[in-house]
Image (tube, rainbow, N blue to C red; front, side, top):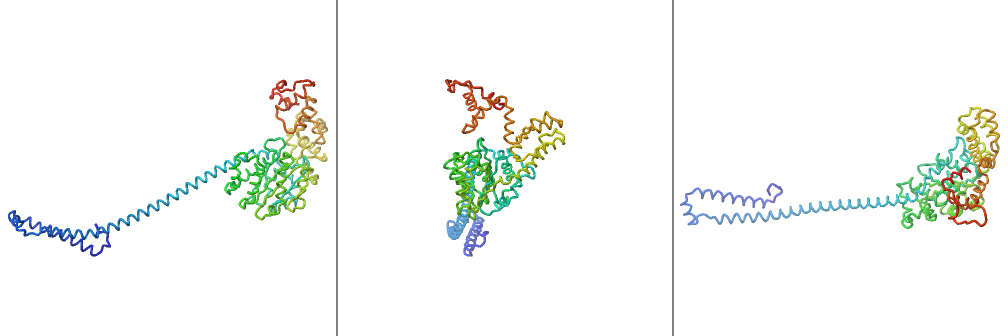
Length: 490
């Protein structure tokens, strides 16, 4: 067994040879002894002619010499085996440490994903695409008054942070323009390096009236569009402190948005804000102050690593203009007055008339449709708001009028202005005095009323007498369901 291992020392080989030579000699001597007769063997044993003890001693001596070598060899082999085992254990330990690290990384990643999901869910307060898509699509050829303007292109192509305020009177198509800018990707020169976000304010619509609603929506869009850039890390500290309350905290949300915009991995961040004038007044002031402060700060707005752009549309109200007036000397601020483009907008409205009339009255002969197109196109100082009301009027009227003479009669009834269009609508009320009461309540209310609140207010306004019991329990209220139907009808 030992000789078969190879690389055996010569002295060890000699010991092995001596040991087995002695054993073989002893066996041969024993064979000779056993071949004698019993008498002869007994006599030789008595006279001690055979040296059995010396043979055994020699074998034991040789065996002891061999054991010295085998013990060394066994010890070395044992050491080698232990080294192999220790190496294997060390390797296993490193594998276990690696597995442990992978598990820790996995747990950390899962924890991070949970936090990101929680933050994203917190910021997802409404269906922003649906809010955008409530505005009509642009007709081909419209909105060019803005898209071709050098001021817009300069803002879009700017390599630094910049602000563009687009103001225009009601009915000029600002919200249609805003949807066009988003749907057709007009806001960025490169989709690969830009993140575009949007928010459409809408007076009276829950979730569309506060600046915190806008920041929540835009942050949600940024984080959803860039899931692999770890931009959520900028929101984690605030989220851990405030949790779900973060959604309504404008200051915290604005701070997070600025941190994300200054992160080089975010690229260019473009924010479209539509109808800022419909934002709740106090909330709008906070938003405008933050916006103006950012673009007034040369360090933040002029940073080469931060490309934070805003496009804001609103009506040209004085309280909004006074805020933007503070940026009049800032090269990163551009004011686009849509009111100066009234002629271009009027020409585009004619394109809308030509495209939409066949859709509104598809059963009318082509000649009749053309008469409507010509009649509406001849009107001066038209707006999209007026056109919307006129189209509503046409849809309701033309089901009864198919002949040329009847058609002419209806055309003569079409309102010439927004005020006239509203007056025409009011004339159709089933109860003008009650309609007047409803309108007065709506005008006087500080916020949009619920159906129940309107029901109570209308009941109080119509019960008459100075000594009436105004307690809630004493009111003879109509059920809210039927009141809603009568309210709409009136």
